[in-house]
Structures are given as structure tokens and as C-alpha cells.
Image 1 (cartoon, rainbow, N blue to C red):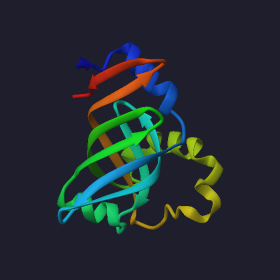
Image 2 (cartoon, rainbow, N blue to C red):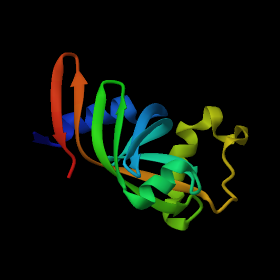
Image 3 (cartoon, rainbow, N blue to C red):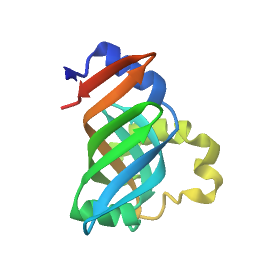
Length: 141
């Protein structure tokens, strides 16, 4: 397994540095759950704007381990609730996400004034990225 390097980081940014629909899996009370979420990749993590009261957040409160899959990439990750999207520390990241999600973000799907609208970070641990027949096994830690 290779550490994330400039080549694999460039591949990740090219493929996932935009609005992407990926499968996000969790385990709750011994049962697997999966759902599609809009994500954006940056800095070794995927970011999701979601509701703190959603089932996925309930699951992650019990067990933050998760897995993702999409566009010839699969990985294990650790889910982290970073808090309300309007916190000052999220200002730059949220500018990027609003731009990436612009096609749907302001159409009534997201209420940033609601304190339950949070930023979810999927901190990647390890994954496999396929690129034109080449398999990259990546250690993101």
C-alpha cells in the first residue's frame, strides 16, 4: 500500500474535487446501511453538508467507522461531525462547497440558518483507486 502522494492526490482531486454522488455505508446495531450522498474531496477527506438529526449521523454517533464507494474508488473512513456550517472555521471550506454544489444547494435543500445543518467530514483511512487499469492502494493516514 502506498502513502497518498502527489500523483494519487492529483487523481483524487481531478475525479472528486467537484460535486460527486457516492455511496456512504455505516453500521448501526449490527446492521449495514448505505445511502447516496453528495460529496466533495479535498485535503484527504470527503465533505458532506447534512442534517445532524439524519440517520447517518445517529449511526456515526454510535460508530464513526464507515465506507464509501463511487467512480472506481472505494475506501474506509472515519466520520466526524464538524458542527454547524456557519462556524467561522468553516468559512473558506463552505465557500468551496457552495460553489461545487451550486446546482442544487440553494434550491431549498439546505437551510444554513438551522443549527442542525452541519459539515460532515469523512476522513479517509485507506482506499483503492482505479485509474485506466492501474490499481492504487492508498494509505491516507
